[in-house]
Amino acid sequence: MKKKKPLLSRRKTAPAKPAKDFPAVFAALKKILTPYEKRLSVVRYKPEFYYLETVLPCYKGKPLHFGAIRLGKNYVSYYLMPVYMSPDLQKRISPELRKRMQGKSCFNFTEIDPVLFHELIALTRAGFAGFCALKYI
Image: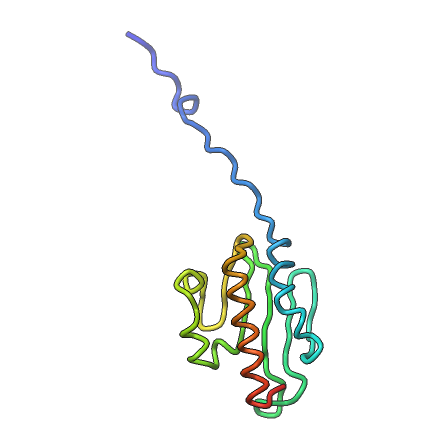
């Protein structure tokens, strides 16, 4: 009768997952918001958080949040307030980008996706135009 090998030696070890390059994702998403710094206010910029808001007081005498990027432990989040405020912008979101959506104005990414980032560029541009039309900017 053959002796069985100990259980530990029979297990196959899974290959280690490659580390995600979240700083590169953060930098790529930041490039989407950077062109709007000239007309908006950079409230906070740290290696893990970037936040833009209107210069003028718009809501209850306070500036209005426009967009932000946050580097988290499991993903990088892209926040775009105009999506929350505009049903027309919500209708423009593709099913692929909607899968990345958490809540009403947050999109989570674990890697750079040129197609979805291009769509975010268009949404951000349309959201900025909407803020301008409402005289928030």
